[in-house]
Image 1 (cartoon, one colour):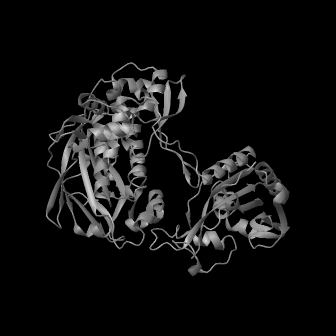
Image 2: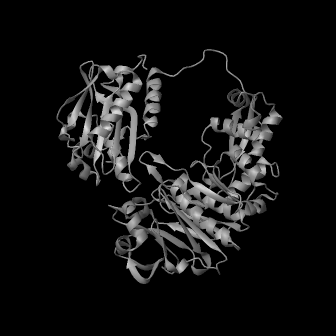
Image 3: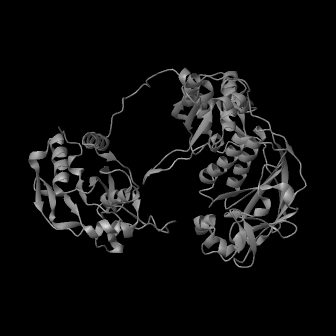
Length: 577
């Protein structure tokens, strides 16, 4: 399995999974042809990234809202329904266990929730071990927000003595030997400074007075979540039984994570056993994992109307069974009862069942129709954006899309632009200082794109066409949105001539070149004497030039940058070209 990486700010690769067809055949229980899989996988919600016929492998992308697709077992489970080898929700037996986790109320100060499960009689081959490791990585990312919301610990059950205690301690009050640095006993504070995982995830515990920790009955350290496990519980080739702990700040998310992980291991042939978690503060005991199906009642008419078909009750129930749901007629007239497996974390609203019904029916079976009524057309704003995109792409510039929210320091100080805080649109109680205002220019975002991609092959030529927001007390909302275009070119020979030729190409293509003039001006963002004001019918609409070296250094860049930015509002709704 290979996880995706960042392309440009504002664009992230989808998570990917490499499937061996031979292994998939074993899991599905059916002979599979790589060409048939190429067609079939798209209809269960997967996108093909690559096919290796020589190695008999397929690489697929899956949506982050389907973390149950993060393993071959999860995909095979869905394919069984698609091929009608198994219909309805899969059943998983959870054997009652006696192991208990006691929760100290002090964890409310740092990481309030924990659930657990036991997996017995594991006998994993090389591929399954790799799946177990990689599914943890993907769940940490998809559900755990990189461990901040959810963190997973997998342990050798037979090396620790129950009951376990989930508590929180002072950073310097406890020492243990951690995985990947087992030669030394370190305090929790030292782990955050010296251990690779501690350094990487120290920000999650920043500012906390106490740190979470899990002890066994003998006060041996099991885990220091969300950082690292103790060496005591390291999983080896001899491990036969696992203890899984999931800690976090979101109770639903940690339960969903446990459900996905335990059902995946069950698909590998292991046995699931429950754990009792005692929340001592409110004398509440829960038993996990809870793999009971979740019941929904949805209108048949609602589903048929949205899908655009007229399925009978029997046909609709069959569609849901094919996507591994249970379904039957409801006691309520015109409704159908649907039971959703515990690993399906993406079902949040009745409209989700519309999509599932369409998948079960087969998108390829849906009739091609045009609804009655008016035929829509692009808004003038979108028409202009699309035209600009075609011209810029034709000039060999790559489009980027950045956030409307931005950081005031980078947006103004890094660009050598002066500002008064009260004159900015400010975000009330922002969750992150990284996004505390709205952008008034596109250029700072493009400079950040260069920063994050400065090691890529040169030249880098990128553009953005999008909205900026300015304060305007004459409007109902006190602000207005304007359409801007910005472009930058970054390489060792970037200069004014190059970016001016782009401006000429753009204005000639739009048919406005005769009304465009570039006159000398000054701006702290640009080099004096190499910057011009762009005018249309004698009215200023933008700026063009070579970026000031101080600005370039603010963004840790090493080559010259030439740039332009224009207000395109003047051309909205006009007949161009």
